[in-house]
Image (cartoon, rainbow, N blue to C red):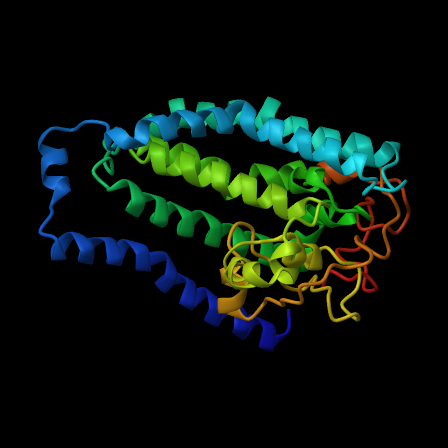
Length: 345
């Protein structure tokens, strides 16, 4: 990695430390200004914070969304995308198997692992910390987790584009020559296994921040799914006059099809594609802060990796456990870390 890029990353990481701390600092300033010390009562009589009464019906809704709701959303989007012909004829058998496996495996394998992590490992590793942060007010807990979770994923994502060794664990997400609801989960299983959100949620629940963690998980999953969809739902916000002010805020705050599709483009020569940026997942705000974002309000004409050779689905799913048989390919046994002609780096 060249010196200039390393220096930029170092500066951005330093700024990130301040951003991580900001919601925590603001919470304590607010508690001080309002004369509240909720931790004193919580430590005197430890209990799980069930939040305020008004929150309970909303929690029930989010619990449903977290279980079957998000799956239903993905399936509905998939039906709509097919009905509109947005995949064209690019979804062949290899792509179908890969997308399906990437959709199912996190639910059948990683979900039980995460549950075990929460139920068995955390009480063993942190026996004195269960519900220690149950006193944190709901909205402050939401802000702290949203920032910590999504900023961490921004860096996880960005480094997989900027460090050659890491790229092969992430290229599966960029290999498809189309965009659609399935793309949100199309990842190498090792990339997914070390993905922070699945462990952050379990840990936050154990520490007493279950409700805020649930809300962040559901909202983030919804945003990222919609941002990957081939349905350009954000387009009216750029074209209808009275919606334009909302669109201006929306595209700078969260990921939308226009900003995230640009990240999946197969070229940056058209002034739309930005595969070396637009890394944000839930929040596009990080890209604005760190100078990695481009807003064009347009959509790429083509997607994927220009040198894509339709590597076998099992190699894309589980490299380096399984390797491609295509000679010289990045996922082959003797393949390079990065194809120099490839767009991602």
